[in-house]
Amino acid sequence: MPKIALITGITGQDGSYLTELLLSKGYAVHGLIRRASTFNTQRIDHLYQDPHDVNTRLFLHYGDLSDSSRLTNLFYQIQPDEVYHLGAQSHVRVSFDMPDYTGDVTGLGTVRLLEAIRKSGVRCRLYQASSSEMFGGSPPPQNEKTPFQPRSPYAAAKVYAHWMVSNYREAYGLFACNGIMFNHESPRRGETFVSRKICRAVARIVAGQQKKLFLGNLDAHRDWGFAPEYVEGMWLMLQQNSARDLVFGTGVAHLVREFLEEAFLHVNLKWQNYVEIDPRYFRPTEVPLLQADPSEAKRHLQWQATVTFKELVKIMVGAELRALQLSDARSQDASLDARFNWFKKP
Ligand code: NAP
Ligand code: GDD
Image (cartoon, rainbow, N blue to C red; front, side, top):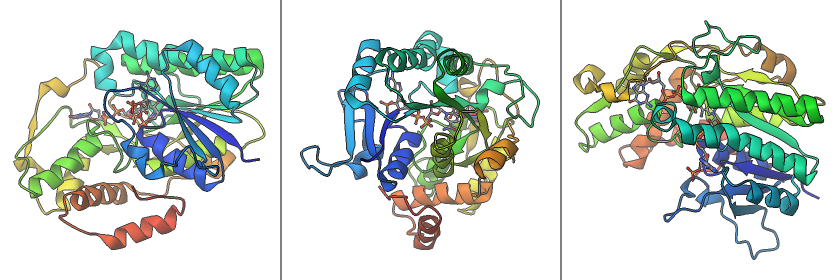
């Protein structure tokens, strides 16, 4: 019998890569999707399998993290072996505009999932998508012992979810892990996160479709890695003999302005000629410096990020240029395919 996985947030960046990884390992994958008036499955459309086919291993279910009874019913129905909880209102800036909603979905949504596991009595392992954003104002490098100092409604909601997962592990003996992941990006990143926003703008400027790029704070440091490597870390966490919380990152931090510099350099343009600051993108409280100390993940899982900052920017700018048919960059794809042999091009 194949192992059965349930993924919340399957339509997001990480959910799509994780689905590819688990399908390549022979899992049956069930995903929670939100009902919307338009299609929201673009990131997983290339993986679609006809539910009438007996060999189908990908199943999608309507549901929402705000709906406890639906979550509990899905546990009875699916009986998953492994649960990857990635669903969240994941945008930090937006969480200042929607603190109530963010607390409900990102914080309480996790508790609803934990309760669904407990009430259904299904014996499964749980991965919770915790975040480096929880470290907030704590000085770097941040590791498993660094105190949390959340500086946004999103981070506060993630801290709540994180501790609830730890509590259910202790109180009910649940095999539950918090993966405290630093920023990870890819061509599938949401368009409003800074990495994708910059890379998309670079290609659109080259194509003559955009003149200016409006950004907020250029002086924050982030530890940016490549998303497919991080979903391998999630899977590894659930294959261990015991559950523990671990930090995942590259260990190297760069400024937002360095990301800009690197991305514009690929098309031989000077970012200073195109970028303008729009205070709308400032956050009421900013996290100045996130830089991981990922040594425990290396020690326990032999996990290590291998894609460098420069490679990441190249991958992302290359994908945007290809999307606008400004480059074919086949060689870059070939090297990526070799490194992530479970990777499926959309
Ligand atoms: P993402 O692209 O924003 O995806 C979020 C997913 O959550 C989407 O599938 C979204 O569905 C779903 N979702 C949102 N609200 C929901 C609700 N009320 N009910 C059910 N599903 C809902 O995020 P990501 O970058 O893949 O990140 C995955 C997880 O890791 C998130 O929890 C994020 O906070 C966390 N994380 C991310 C990073 C990072 O750098 N990427 C780092 C640390 C932690 P729709 O497609 O319908 O919107
Ligand atoms: N989004 C955005 N848009 N960020 C900007 C902009 C802009 O126009 N201009 C500057 N920034 C700065 C932000 O202020 C922040 O310091 C940095 O760029 C990165 O912002 P995001 O890409 O939005 O990511 P994030 O670090 O706030 O949050 C992401 O990483 C977390 C892990 O540390 C998200 O994926 C979270 O869900 C995740 O938990």
